[in-house]
Amino acid sequence: MTVLTPNQTSAGKPQVLHRRRKPLATRAYKAFRVAALIAVVLFLIAPLFWMLLASFKTNVDIYDTGKALFFSPTGENYANVLQRNNYFVFIFNSFWVAFVSTALSIVLGVPAAYAMSRFTMHRSALVVLMARVIPGVSLLVPWYYVFSNLRMVGRFEVLILSHMFVALPLIVYIMMSYFDSLPLELEESAQVDGLTPIGAFRRITLPLSVAGIATAGILSFIFSWNNFMFALVLSGASTKTLPVAIFDFVSYASIDWGGLMAAATVVTIPIMIIALFTQKYIVSGLTAGATKG
Image 1 (cartoon, rainbow, N blue to C red):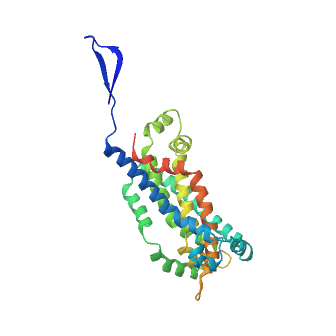
Image 2 (cartoon, rainbow, N blue to C red; image 1 turned 90 degrees about the vertical axis):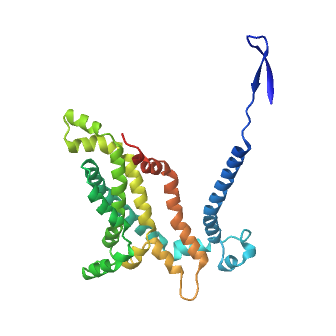
Image 3 (cartoon, rainbow, N blue to C red; image 1 turned 180 degrees about the vertical axis):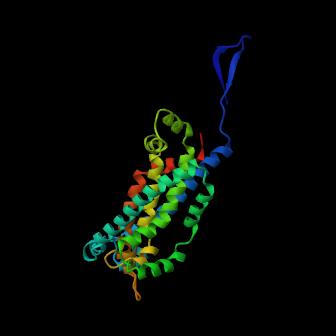
């Protein structure tokens, strides 16, 4: 399509402007991309949506396919979870184990990651990463044997130590990439001004690495909050966490799907809220080591 304008060229002829049209393939690709993104989002949200709806249904309504979307909601499942089964205790246990294990892992892991980054201790980093790769189930039997002989099974200390075994390598690996992306010249300038290497780390490097620490801490907290295997074997009646408490709705003869979905919702909502409000820190921290300099 052409458009004539009143502007005249040097030859006195009208100037012709051509309006570019987007190729059909480009528009088709964009439409396909939007449709694919919508399909992926629906695929990921559908289980959560079903879980939320099932938490307000009776077991009879859950098995009735005709009441998948339209049913009479009930709060009996949440009353059973929060009041009769005293899930507030399990929520506190999960929060306490996740918070303490994450805090201790940060205190130990951040200085270790800084030393490995600045002194190029790549072999030590691989050893730390191997601890993250080892399947946790292979450690349960030795842990249970050692802690049972020490009469520590069922205590918070055992759960915290077991969670730190996985959280600490994760924090070290993330923070090493983050420290590698920070210019070394900043610390050298601080040392020229009279700071010691530890002072430069505390006053210069540490404040600049807040986003990386937040990322590592959030991921570590989420792992600890959702961990089921370690708590199933090493926890006791007074230290039971939420994932283990949810398993109580599964019996030999039947499954209380309504209570199970209500308890799963109670576990999921705090993590979703944390991830929603901290996603910018997670993205910035995970992409910090992509470029250096």
